[in-house]
Length: 490
Image (cartoon, rainbow, N blue to C red):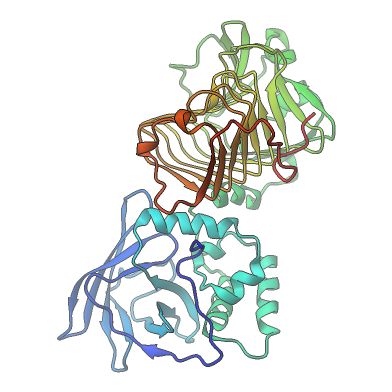
């Protein structure tokens, strides 16, 4: 059984809370930073902790001074703000409960506002657990069994927090975990509270829906012309039910395409602009849509919504220098079958792409092409029938796939100098060639792979430490697409 959030909590009918002393080398996790006690002076009760995030960046550093009571500490120094809300002089209690140790940060009103859990895990394991927690939709179970942190709670809206608070307050007898979670949830709703920005890309992309859009930033479209007109930063585009949008109808017509904010060019490789631009870029057999310097763009489909392109060498979406681009409930691909040289979604020097309940299909070379990019999350989606393979990732970091199907592709996953690639609860079948051709560690968590073992690729660089995957020595001819993954295929 895998750990989903920080540390598994054992609940007993009789709960004993004991004080604990921080020791040198102790490691604590707050949902974003892994803090290590690098210096401890027991004579004066001083502790110096240094934080490191999932990208290996050294973050907040702070000091604690022991109080008079056992397990009592206080933040020392005017710069002590390790959790975006703690201040110098605030109290920290080190609590131990049946094998679980954690720090509880209290505001002047004695309410717990932040938590850190003692852990033996490294950064890779901790961030993987955090992502697993994010995908866990059984909130009732989480409220009762897991100690939360403000990083995890950052994904929830105020209404959702109120619902969680009501569930906990309805319980007559709350244990230490439930009571701590209740205090954290209440602190998230304090006026003017500085809420923690979600760190994982799934939450980071989803947070775009909390952007303060006005009515002029929302569009409803059912054709290619209106869709391209609606493209831009800080916008939500809703595509009507059963609308089939062929971008080539506009991209290939210079007279239709050219308007302010759009550029008709031949090559975006050295293209430069200080502003967001919508580009029609030439490829070998036509033109493709390139979004340049666009951020906070949400493209949402409804049942039957499709976005297509004609040229076999064109990507459906080519994202260059973009940030926080979200796709949901869409079918995306090429109208022309056969071999292609264009992918479906391509990221170049972009970050924060979220793909939810989407169907990416060939004959694109790859479903996803990543170049010098980071932070992609793909959930409840599928990639299939691509002429080269499932995806190609070059110089990328933090690409996460959860509950996705990859099938009927000519090859698998190609990766060069790409780190922190993770597959959770994914299903690989009826793919050809080597399933993995990568030169950096790839994490597989509770995945099924129907593929000949001899063709699974350079498996030696993959991490199968927990053996939390299933491998079948065939290509899975009899394995069907799961109905709970992705939109219905056309």
